[in-house]
Image (cartoon, rainbow, N blue to C red; front, top):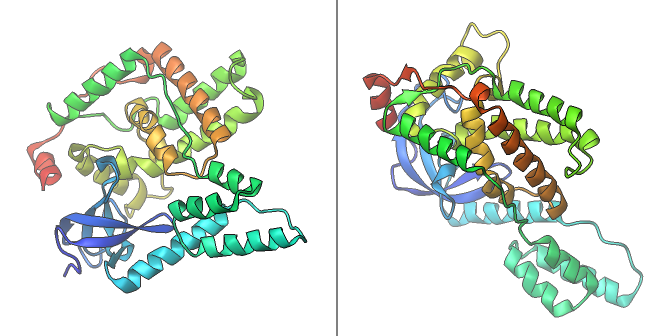
Length: 319
């Protein structure tokens, strides 16, 4: 039996931290069989993280949830304090009395567990170190130049899936992994001067995009009409008893879903720990990827969505 109920306020693990969330749907699961989406047996919960965009709504198993009570809120704060301490850059040791006081202030500040508290404490110190830490708390701004033709393709994609009950045929040709490999080859051959250290950085940036895609696909890149297909794909390529080598989502999905991810990169980066310089590098590479995808549009994107979402699929998606 499900431990949590629809519309219940809960705390939910997302990565290393815990966030306030609300349960939108509850699905009773098989206690023995792993769920096709989460990979965990038992009840499954569709949650919305409070204050987040609905694109982050996701299905989670019971072990990701906690009751919203004082004890678990203390645990939430402790995890945030630990994460904040990990992210804070190390400071140079000093033997002066002022440095000792500053270190003590930093320790006190860690216990507040909030970024707003950090800014308030630092404002009273007036030290260069304080100013540096304030700068470090600013969220990097990632502005993308999405070509109008690709924006139109996103609209067509949305209408095909949500209005016309059509699905992308999977696995795609080329897959995300294949087209990113082609893009990396393109960069090596052209060596664009406006990209920083293209020869040395391109492989790392593209590997990062692939990793982002593999993690984001099931969490925030699918329309609900695509969920049943996603569940079938997981069984066929990942969790099924006859699967010998599990596949990554980037080895199955293609340009349509990669484009969805790329346009949401600013919000994804805002949730990450990337600094401003790294964010600028990723932005420039993503903008260059847009240009290349537009040039290769006819080859990368499926000309039409041929796989029809059956009534049974649609009923599951709406349940």
